[in-house]
Length: 283
Ligand code: NAD
Image (cartoon, rainbow, N blue to C red):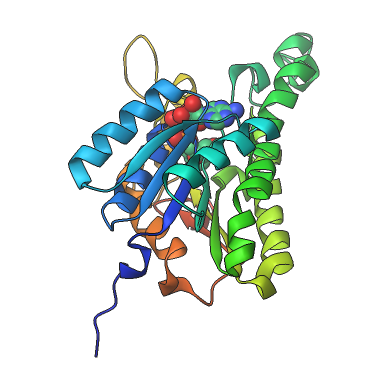
């Protein structure tokens, strides 16, 4: 009997949006380690090139950086043409670009009698511009790349999409309503698209990372002055049964599992990688 492996991924072509980010880089490292060709499609081309060069040198895999804005179809189509020319038809798409912004974050967690006269710090003070930006980056920024980058999979009648969700998709965290709503929409869209594409050989799943300290959330979970956890950061650790934040490498196994043929009969699911956070009722 042959040992199970991720050998089916060798030589395939994977595109990862936002692949130059903290979690994306860890995913790219895992995928490169099994010999998949990777295009890091990121709005920050300079970092994408740098990450690609480093991982290519380290792993021996073919990894390239490509400029792409997940909110702009033309830019995605240009990126696809470049990827097809340099690496070949696309087999796997990871929708990694996403994140929150201070402009879509309320200052207070909940309204109380003490703070209710400072409406600007609450839900009522949210600027639509910031809200729209965060919602679009996380939802439309998954929808559009999926429309563009899965076209070769249709031709091959085989392919995989992996979306990146969040703990906010199950139960919203305070302060970040746009991000929470957008990530909930990712779970819903993952199910919807998995059904829509099931008979043409394309599987669609998602991973829901728990809490990892990265650029987008550092301002919320670490106290800038002391470098210690903020009260919110401490609350997260206290509500994570494993008692810690995750390391980006913790996402690697789930990523390989969901993009390889090992999970051939799995579509339309969201796997939490969260140290038990989503299983814990808080008491
Ligand atoms: P990050 O900010 O380190 O990386 C995001 C990457 O996306 C960056 O390289 C950025 O240049 C790129 N990007 C931003 N806008 C883009 C656009 N319009 N087009 C193309 N690329 C764009 O973030 P991260 O923490 O690595 O997060 C990656 C994903 O994981 C996001 O979807 C995020 O919502 C999700 N997530 C993160 C956490 C966490 O704890 N960090 C938890 C759950 C889910």
